[in-house]
Length: 82
Image (cartoon, rainbow, N blue to C red; front, side, top):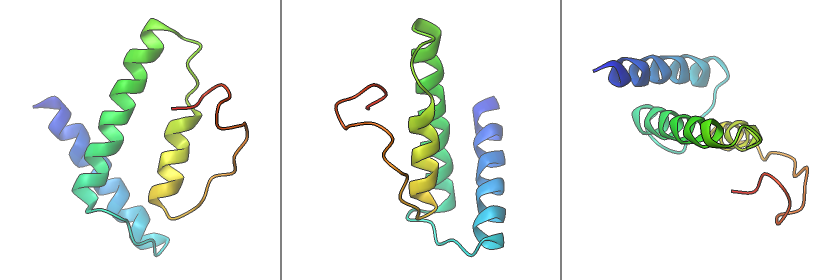
C-alpha cells in the first residue's frame, strides 16, 4: 500500500529526529506517524475544499509531539482553531 510506505517514511524520520534531538515522543513512533499522516490527509482534503484553511495547526501538533508548547498566536475562538 502506498500510504503504508509514506507512513513508514514518516516513522523513520520521526525516529531519527527524536533520537538526534533527544526527544521522548508521547506515543510510539508508529502511532505518531499514523497521527501525522492522518492529520495531513485531513488537512489536505479540507484545503482542497477551502484553500483558505490555515495549515498552522499541523505544525502546532508536531511541536506538541516534540514536547514544545506552541505559542498561541490567536485567541482560542479566532481563525485557525481546530
